[in-house]
Length: 143
Image (cartoon, rainbow, N blue to C red; front, side):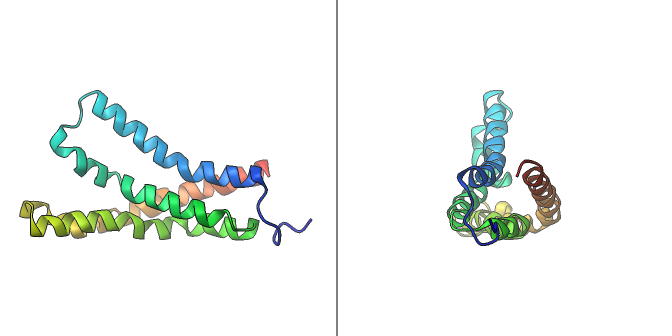
């Protein structure tokens, strides 16, 4: 069977979807634990949601889940390697919207968030490619 031409099997697709959704679930878990322990006040609630990139991560996971369903193995692996770069677009939008809204209706001090996310791009790429590497390595081991 030529795996480069056939669609992903259910098990392989589930593996990729699990790898895709795991970071969001982990971040939600850490954030919820922090809220439960009282680390975040209600005033900083939305700032921390943006800081951890959860809106962008959710939109990215939804988009990538839909795209992964119509891919073959080779295309899915290519998606895994391109995911950190494509995620940056999804990550930046909530930051930019928050910063622009702060310019218009909020405290001017928060407007730095419209461009402050750029400082985190190297960290996103390093973490993203680490996760991509682990995902591909585990995929090669199990499939």
